[in-house]
Length: 219
Ligand SMILES: Nc1nc2c(ncn2[C@@H]2O[C@H](COP(=O)(O)OP(=O)(O)O)[C@@H](O)[C@H]2O)c(=O)[nH]1
Ligand SMILES: [Mg+2]
Image (cartoon, rainbow, N blue to C red):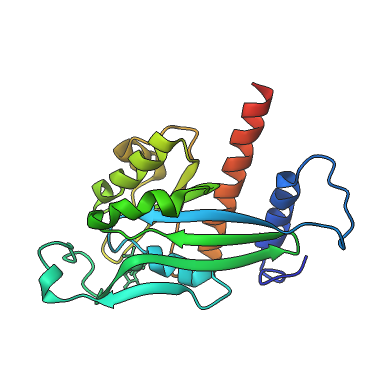
């Protein structure tokens, strides 16, 4: 396996096996004829929950992000009361890339958090393999829009629970109940600033997609 995660502990073995399982049946092509598959993944969640941080932590290219300075004009629109350190906001999307190996490239799209950019979601999420919905336990309701969206579209998703300074560390079952997330949907703790933690969230998503597809085949 080559690529940015070659030497990263944990990711190599797990992602390699996920990659193999995502290959089409009977793919015995040599490296020369092997096709590169690209996979689109989405990172969603409320304003200030860590989407831009998540994409930046794991992207191998400088992430394309459309951050703009927050002005006093937006203070009544974007609730930054719980994200004091936040001075910028994503006005369109975040974009990053991860080369898993010579056959698989993943593209990460972070949604704009603000509801007034909701019209962009369909284009951003079109053709996505799955999504990570980030949640902040101090304001779980901010993630409802994203959860409803992916449930309605039948897009596989997992939930990443961020822990901000001062937030109570709720057990996962309590978070699941509060979010109303079905038992088969994985929920993982996630520090969007930490590359390893972000990788775990993404591998969890890929494994979830694999399980759903396998279940659909044997049904
Ligand atoms: N403690 C903690 N802080 C985070 C985490 N993710 C993001 N942050 C911080 O929260 C703020 C908002 O993050 P940002 O990525 O801009 O949120 P976005 O609006 O969802 O894109 C930034 O100051 C980040 O450094 C996390 O997992 N843990
Ligand atoms: Mg952002």
